[in-house]
Image (spheres, rainbow, N blue to C red):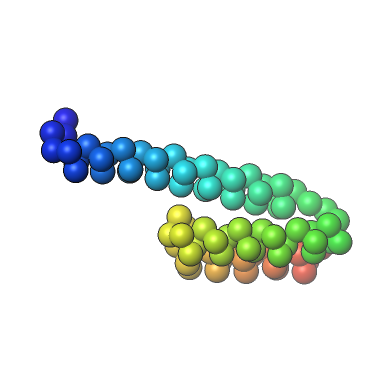
Length: 83
């Protein structure tokens, strides 16, 4: 167990960040699942910009890697074009 005041603070900060990162990652995964189950091209075209924005924000914060963000956006765009 940590003893120093700064180490205890770091533990508290890490826990808060971990919970927030998990929340954001789970939100993204749920949005991806909903998007991938869409069958209407018009609906998918409407939702794509907001999902891309969400992915970009997570990559900027470092929650997901920037290359993963690019791969996700590319796959989603291909999916929309294939509908």
